[in-house]
Length: 118
Image 1 (cartoon, rainbow, N blue to C red):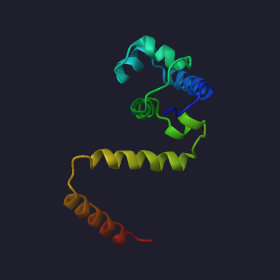
Image 2: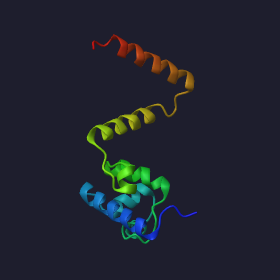
Image 3: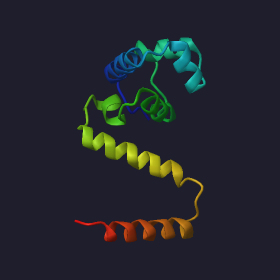
Image 4: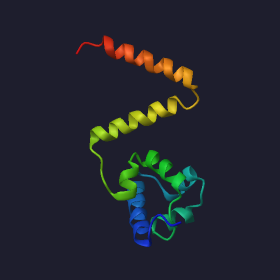
């Protein structure tokens, strides 16, 4: 099943290349982060190979961009990006926490917010 056509893959590759350059990273550094060869990064940037889904998340973190931008070119508002970063940070903190502990954390946060002055 194909998710993107050749033109979309090429455009996404250009976005990846521009984000990499803006981030000051080399193709080798990006390749190391993705666990692929430099040649594969070159192929992705040129639109000759599609970027694997699991690599998209890594690239977004690496370049500090949203998946929306990478996939569609849509730039999010700063507030949306800040909320997305906060969501990602919270998700990462709670990865190894069981549901009971998550519920306790949620209740603590609720209590803290209730005590804040309006």
